[in-house]
Length: 363
Ligand SMILES: *Cc1c(COP(=O)(O)O)cnc(C)c1O
Image (cartoon, rainbow, N blue to C red; front, side, top):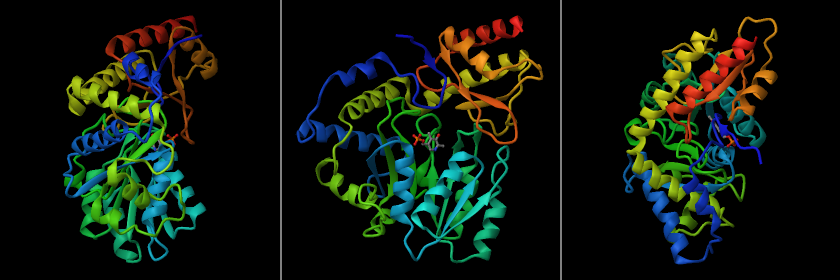
């Protein structure tokens, strides 16, 4: 078996101890198992800086997109209208979800290398009072840009709208004061910065906002309200839960705490990211996003000017030496991406940069 570390934004490299948790086949009816689910939900609230009186955490089977689709199709009713702010593929995906589900929506499209302007959003909300919900992505994994959810929160909350944030690739790796920002629904998944394995998403929801979703969902399996009501009773998932993934996630949460919590993890990611950009810049690569908006999670690098540069060749060279990087996804520039989240340390980044230096020397 070829082994390499993942420098991708999820699935990502996890610890041996997280992987080991999955060697147990756990029963789901059992009190022990339900307790694990309840304890995960409680811990997620703590990480989000919210109180159990005001907020709840709901786990949802499937990948991150299932969580986003669950929120949009459970919260936006036939009488509502959703404003989607997009500056990358994940924002666009929300529009695709809204389109498929027949939700009334409007797309505010921004350039991929710019953060959405909160003044412009305030204007859109002032012009169209029919808008009831606003959704956006925190870290747009497409480019690695970090959007200003706090500035947008201000105008969305001032206008009295429901605020939905896809914090898939940032929650657990960047501290987010969810209650202070007034976020109504925040979505993330097991296989990103909490450093678990893929299999479920989770939603931190303001109880009041979630309670108002009763009977609105377009889908049975993605009905967030019903999932909450079932889980709230005693920790039982509505349908078969990804037991191995849940056990691994519980372990990953313990390890996040042992590392020193989100702030310590964010520090590690920031150090990784800083060295990565420094070293690759020295080798002649430049970043697609300017440094003020660059997230500490994943970085897009533009292809170097070399006429004989080939991403495929470089990818294979790097992978043969133990690391898997990620193709680019922006439309207006040739880029590749390197994630620095997961069980990745400064030693890995040093090694990776040496591999890149070796590759560029051969060129
Ligand atoms: C990973 C990710 C998702 C979800 O993707 P899945 O492939 O469905 O897990 C959604 N939004 C963002 C910003 C992401 O990084």
